[in-house]
Image (cartoon, rainbow, N blue to C red; front, side, top):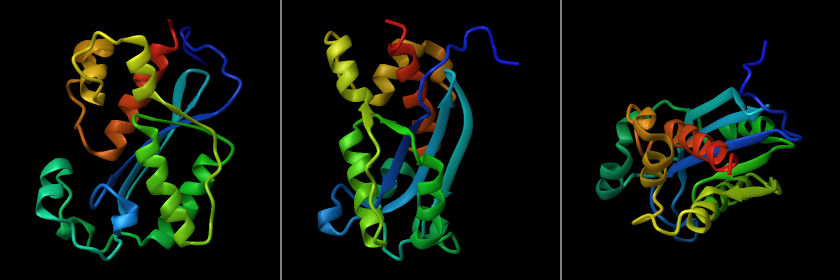
Length: 178
């Protein structure tokens, strides 16, 4: 039975986040973690989460941001194992991300390396927050989450893909109430 606060959406949406070895796929940086949640009827109905061993060292400064170490990636699935499964998870969905151009740009690059393409429509909660809340001191995911969700986001682990994807989903759903 659906909760009383779930409203019918016309599409399946997938909020996602990636963690990477750096800031630019053009510089050889790669996706090392994918997190995503599927949203139907304004409710999270499924999750996808995986570390990805791309065989590339993670710079120390980058490890300090997300906490993913080279040791954590040892034995994790390779991109050719993770990405086809993730592709199925997002198939036919509208993608939602905070700073969508970053996450989707990296995913497009990763898919292209496997001869696949990513053509899903996307929505950016960063752009939405800038438009809806111009008075916020900044529009980082953490700032927007605290503003819209208050203490309910406090237990989330920032800069880990699944928790950031959940936060993007929650703020997107909250922004949709306006």
